[in-house]
Length: 430
Image (cartoon, rainbow, N blue to C red; front, side, top):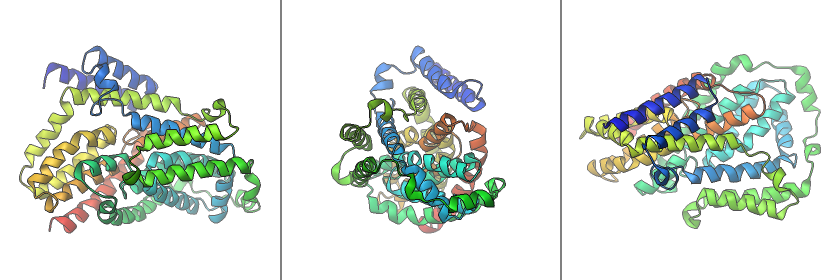
């Protein structure tokens, strides 16, 4: 590698160390790292802001912005209070039952929507129900972020990396249902067991609080029924457009912005009220992270690392599959899985062709998808949903540190990827 490539690696690792150590705010670390990358010419303005391969992924930024506005309007209707009371009553105030209910809802919704949209919708409910039952909210938020990443892996539209893989590999919505969804169901069952082990200290049952919640009427929580129906109609249209992406060909970001604009224009909600829930620090953090990772792409660091891995396993499909699965999980824990998959997919496409095209070699696409999607659970910055949940938690006075998330994420990632290993081996390689 060139001297500039090594320097860009040093800058990235330095910024990542600051994010992990929390010596300074993560937004400051990401923006500082991005600024240094631009200053040393590891990337430039055109590559950082306009390149599809190495620039800020504006689709992600505007998807987040649009959905945050929609959630901000929904919050004023009282629907989140309604759902919180409904969930607590269905769980009869039992903490673990409540977590199972919220986690399953999150996973199912993430398979139909993208996982970021799901956590934006479920987080406000979680704060309210945990407050009602006097439960610590952080374990529930962490579990939901991880469930969104696992559930999102099941379908083409559930996780942004899957959209990239489908486009490059010529894979359909049904391909993901057939090859990914069965194992995701197994992983969710295992994950629910892990939740009991990891968070059992948080499951303290308060019979008095539970009794108070059971006596509540959730219908009284709705503050504005007209606004609720308007918001739900727009949200339903947005969700339908997400699912129909292969037919309509509208990017999720475009759908989210159109939905947000329609909701603000068609209701009495003011602009100030609509943007009150936007997590601006989270959006800026993503921008800085994209610029830093883009600099590693521009200087050839990520490409060279990937190429070396490919060369080391050339001609051995089983070894290549396992190496790709675990390497993808490891690298997606360090950098956001969206730019990682965007970088790796051309290399995987060549490997698939070299190993029989859409025959045996197709297993490599599933290895990449499983590794990137599940590896995103390993650290606080491994997936977009993680960053969004941490931002929402901090805004609501319940900060989640990098290591607080990561100590659970590493366990979940190792267990889930370990279970996927025999699945890929037995189904595709024997």
